Amino acid sequence: MPINQQDQLNLLKDILSNHQTDCCGSVSECEQLERLVKSLISSPNVDQSAKAVLEEIYNYSQNGINSSQLDNHIEMHQQELSGWVDSINQFS
Image (cartoon, rainbow, N blue to C red; front, side, top):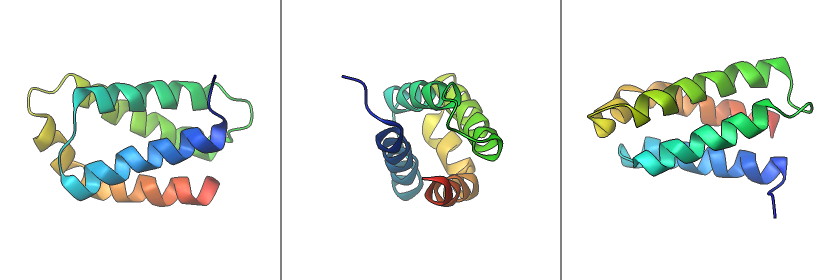
């Protein structure tokens, strides 16, 4: 059973918050971010400003998946992670 858009946004926010708080994560979390973002971007209910943020998160997840130093990648994006969580709060 697919999860609704609000649940997807909550899950996206949870993973990003965990990356920010813990300064670490896993490739499978980055893959989950990627799947969530793809699903949300394809939704007609998501506006352009939200899609811009989602594209940034997608790039972050792609780079995380391909990073040999995932924890360093997460640490380098602490400020963006905070901003993305704030943005998601505004459009969720």
